[in-house]
Image (cartoon, rainbow, N blue to C red; front, side):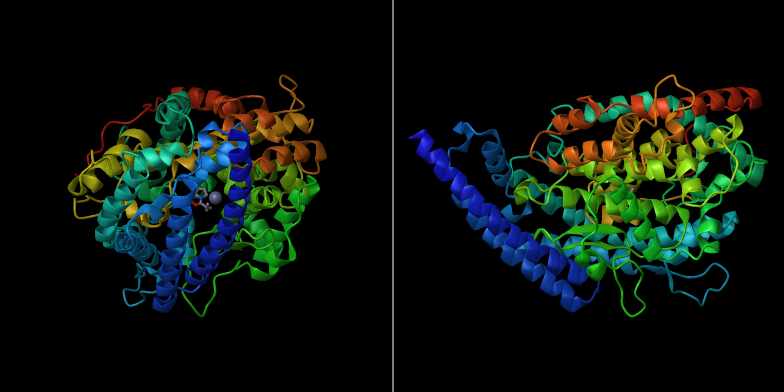
Length: 597
Ligand SMILES: C=C(C[SeH])C(=O)N1CCC[C@H]1C(=O)O
Ligand SMILES: [Zn+2]
């Protein structure tokens, strides 16, 4: 009868979950071995292990299908069966599975090992993305040098991934269909468990776009003042290589010469970190201390022993920062080629947020050891970093000295946060709008580059520094495209982290609406056990409940909404509108005149 079979089902799934944990541990170890030492041998081993494990998954899946779990009474048991009923890429026949793994591995190692030649010394061709090219974008204000680095990187890391990418799209779409989806776009969106996910993304963009357009107009004016109107036009998109970042996804490196009140004391965190002999280890210890101050969990011994936090000199590794769960409840690691600067201080907190989430849900069944949705996992560390980057906290830890805030300093502070958080949204939105079109087949391989730039022109208001052709493939010059990592998670994160931050600040007594002595921009939840406990309760849920339940547990809201972000940046929005009015700057942009289709 139903009772017996539900009890049988429970015993079965508990055993299956234990086996799955062992499989995921093996897969993570093989993946780690390869990405922390990129060699042919380790690539072969990794694919061999993945293939072996996919066979075991397929076998287990055949048995799982036999249970009539849809009729079970227990919500969690039904949810576990539902998740285990989705096989994933292992649904592909062995040969195609292996081919897909080789395509992604090929793109990822091309990205990780790509080097370019120096602008001034054409015989020096060993510049890597981290730290060399990243440093050029952070420091150089020579448009020609920036154009050179941009072009060399896009031609090396992007174009060379094109064949692998085309085959990956075909094979991944086949896997999607074997899992009952129309294509990978539908598969990726199913992770968010809402029927109108794409419409929600569009609505959020409509809410934030006016603020972005004001910020875009202001920055374009400041860049035109600096570089002249032959390089930065009055009404067109902004050339992508002038924004301090290879992908123009964060503009924090141009803050020093574009901030609203330049005569206000410069808060140069990077300089302060260097002056105080910060090391990568100290950055991680600082972050660990912040989480502990909230009564959250300390990093375990294995974390400090097994993590790689500096770029090795004796081998090639995947430098793109990542946080790892080895699904055994004690082995958690970060791999990151850490530089001592303000941007990496934020990335360290971002990665430590992933580890804290792993620690908080480590007693859950393996299948529930994931974010409430992928955006939640990306938002934890950034939410903590919103407190860390407040002037109040930076003074607390001695990275900023002295004076209290005044109106102009506050605008400078909001501007610094805005060129990191607001400008990221159209970048993230376009990256997956582009890939949705690719997976749906509405963008053919011939049109890849044209559609990529048409979206970036229309939504982000940036253009390539030089003409592009259909033989280029600029999208793959971004890690996540070469590494098959979905990106809407970051778009979601940059929205919901302000909902989390606002709720935590209220719980910490740091933010009281309408109380000018308790402003959101000054909030620092450091040492607030009250806030930490609420965060911990949400994180412990993992993916055991639909994400609106997790969102409600922490914020009282059941939807992702832009109101947290818009409230945080309201004073900046008002300032930008007045400033753009004063200078008469054109708001928005006309289509690019650069030939990219
Ligand atoms: C730091 C990570 C690893 Se999950 C990352 O990829 N991030 C963090 C924010 C945006 C995105 C990026 O670098 O493109
Ligand atoms: Zn992340």
